[in-house]
Length: 310
Image (cartoon, rainbow, N blue to C red; front, side):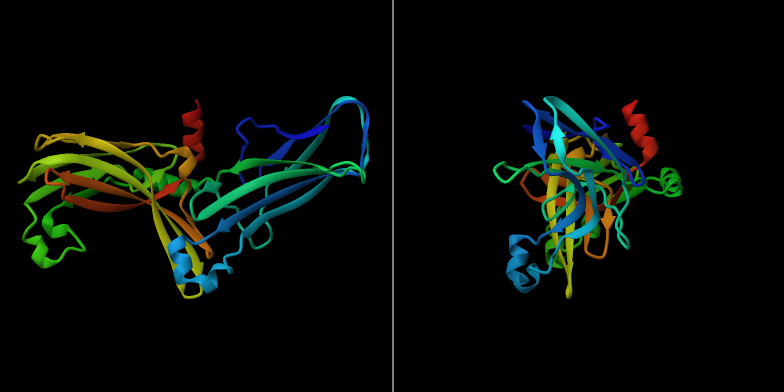
């Protein structure tokens, strides 16, 4: 005998307020009895500190309990027999958060993990092993339509990078930095996660040869504790947009697609935060480098999802 969970949507993607429906599929060789079938719907955000942070805040590590925002138990069958072959038990529920909680977007990170699970249990007799099956489904949260409209009308973000604009550099060290000026723009610093981030970069002047120019996408995960927050940044992807000593004044296109499995809408809550940044990295021929950091905000738009699926 085996048990499985079948959902009505192939992509298993749902939004707040959606009806989640499907069936519990039981396959049996011959008639089999059971003592009940129960479906549990659970959603939670699991938090953990990095190895470095555990050493600093060991006493607080155990206080990072999962944040539960969905919990629902559905009795599929009180008990009985299933006939030979395949039997389906339909189910349906509305995707809503627990009282005083909110739904977060599905996200699989390093220190923050937001997951929604369906777990079905079939209770068997004393001499038979109970059956269990788990299946993950995904939650997407659309941004407010008015916010999306405002961001689409926002002007491109202009930037200039020169020795004078660099931060975290001592004045004595700045005198040793070769003269350069990089200018450009990003189409948006608030980006739809299902659409590419675009822009343009120009090397207006540079006194030394350039070896490479790269774009680095970084996620910043934060877990809150009584004294503040433990903040960890990890690289998601790194793409090269120029190779070698580029022509001065040439428009270099910036184009980055956000990887689906490692990004989500920016999440800010009392217990944790998931934020994103883009680093523009210019590597000189002598292996010195200049890095400019651009904090970005990601959101999800239902209209953009529809366009990308068409």
